[in-house]
Picture 1 (cartoon, rainbow, N blue to C red):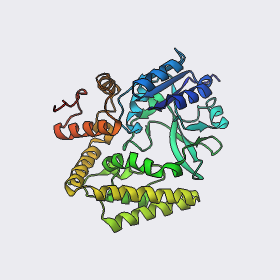
Picture 2 (picture 1 turned 120 degrees about the vertical axis):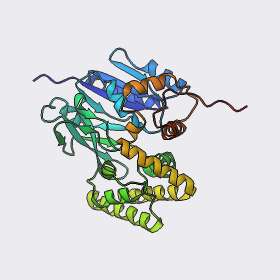
Picture 3 (picture 1 turned 45 degrees about the vertical axis):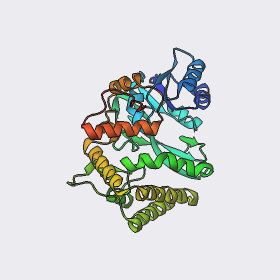
Picture 4 (picture 1 turned 30 degrees about the vertical axis):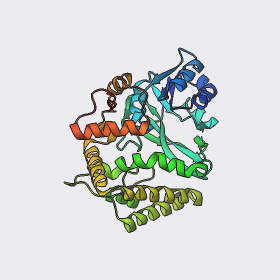
Length: 334
C-alpha cells in the first residue's frame, strides 16, 4: 500500500535555531515541511536562510501570543493529505514515525505526549487528515475531526522536553492573561473539572446558553476547583509533579483574575461570553478564515508583542462587533 502524502507543521516565534533543528531531524520523513513563523525580522531571516526550498518553506503570520489561534491558518497552508503537528521542543518516537506508513485505520489520531520533567502523559490530536479538520472550540481544545478518531498506544508518543519547573513564574506570566479570555475560572470551568473528559477541558463552553455572562468564581470556590483538578490529574497520571503543576497553574489563573479591577473582570467576562456564543475565540476573531489571517499579517508592522496584538484584536471585535478588517497601528500621540 502506498503511503499517503503527509506534511510536518511547526509553529515558531523567536527561536529559529530550535525550529530548524527539528526540521533537520524530521524533514526526510515528510513530503512537505511548513513552518508558521511569528518572529521579528532577525528571526524570520534566519529561518528563511536555514530552510531548503521547495520542500521546506516558512509562512510569516501575525503574532498573537496564542499559537492555538493559528492552527486553522497553519492547516490551510498544507497541501498534503495528512498533517502532523509538532512543536520545536517536542520529539516524536520512532514508533510514531513508523505510524505514518499505516494511516488507513482512522481520519485522526490522538497522540500521547510524555511530559518528561513532570513524569506524566497528556493527550493531543496531532495527526489528522487535512480535509477532516475543523477548528477547535475553544482554541486550546482538540481540533474537531469529521470522521473516525483513534487513540495511539504509548509507544507511539511525543516526548515534550520543556522543563516547566525551571520557569514556572515565566510560564504563568505568559499564559494567565490569555487564559482569562477563553478559560476564566468561572462556573463553566468548574463544571468541566467535575465532568469533562481529559484533554477536552472547556467543553462546557460549547453549550453556554445562559442569558448573561458568568462572573469569575470567588476565592474558596476557585481554590476548590483547582484542588479537584489537581486530584483528578493525580489519579489519572499517577504523577505528583504533574498534579502540583496543575494546582499551581489553576490557582494562578484565579489569582490573576482576582487581582483585576472589578470593571475589567466584568468586561472580560462579557468578552468570554460573546466568544463562546460565536463558537470560540478562533471564530470570534475571524481566525477560522486563513485568508483573513493572511491579509491581517500582510499589514502587520512587527513592532508589537503577541499579547498586545491579541488584546487589540479582541478589543476591536468587542467594540465593533466584527473582526478587525486590517491591522492599523495606533497613532503616536506625540
